Length: 322
Image (cartoon, rainbow, N blue to C red; front, side, top):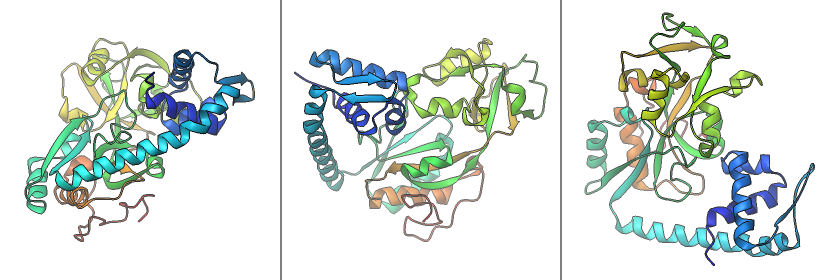
């Protein structure tokens, strides 16, 4: 019987946390997604793994037996992956960099040219992040670095080389009642329907719905989009409004969409992220330096000083504080 390691990781997280909410936050997935994964594992194994109560979730006898073996097995698998990818990196010459639509403008031809100068013979392979993996491929080791517009607290979970900050704006249909405003107060948007990204996006869904700034006020979901094109189409068709990086107004300008600054909405931190458990390789450090040497106004501020070490400025350490 083949079992997806993702299901086992979800199982172990629930065992260790004792509740779905904390486990979902730890895994960067939504609670409904985590519940679905646990039920899928139980159906696959044909056993009940947890006793559910108001106090949380406690493993059954079968669940405890699985937990004794699942943890060491996953640790061994992770070590095998790290060794495999480290060996490939030593003999390879390709740096895999993920990006989201609003951050690709940070990387230009100058960036790649600068990286090639620092790392002769190396290439940069760009992979656009999807909305169904909260780690954008970092969790599986499919990519080495990813460019994110992210909340500042994410530096507690990942290593980050900060490139700057960028405001989040609102995307409105051109005929919207607030489209004529130069700046819109966040409070004026609270009752609007929003275009959301899928639940599988985990904490990213809440971040781009500005849940933390809403002080408990529920979000009205007008539509769910599975990619950037669907997102913009939903806005154009009046199914909802959405928050986006400010650079979207230049990357995806449309006569039928009005992008407006929002007063009272925190900015995003633009940076290169990689897993806490992974050391910064020479190629990764070189790419950090290249981005910082060529970053423009997209990141919203002056690029940090390059001291040639790959740890210039004060935001390239695991906790983001140097």
